[in-house]
Length: 155
Ligand code: CUA
Image (tube, rainbow, N blue to C red; front, top):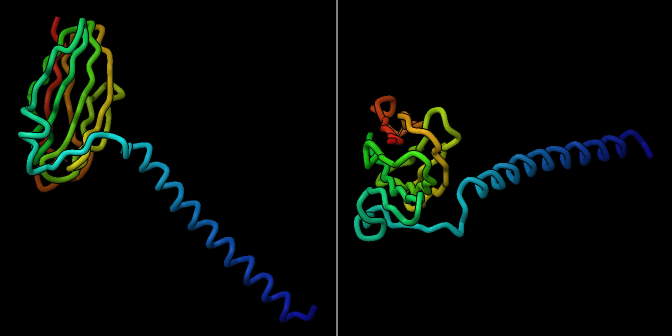
């Protein structure tokens, strides 16, 4: 091997490393995306939310079990407040009418991106009564910082 051959070997090795790094980053973020938005989840047409998703509401679906259908839009969450009783298990279905928002209940681990066309689903249990603030963590426009709602867990 002469110098020229070594140079080629290292050049190729360096290129492979770069491709490897890019693949890791791309693959990694795709993996994360799948974890956050499950493809098998329900989808809805943002312009037909009223028919497909229905009114923003809380439904009593079983003993101590509730379903909250929440719509995020610039710059509110509906219903507001979301009201559920203490000692309940609540499944949240959250979608957006317009742009990407988030649904983040302060002081809990409920925190999800809300994407038009997708329904984010999560379940939480509330043992005690209390009031929680809901905020939007995704920049969604000039009044993003004012976008907030309330979750009331009532006795
Ligand atoms: Cu909605 Cu920021």
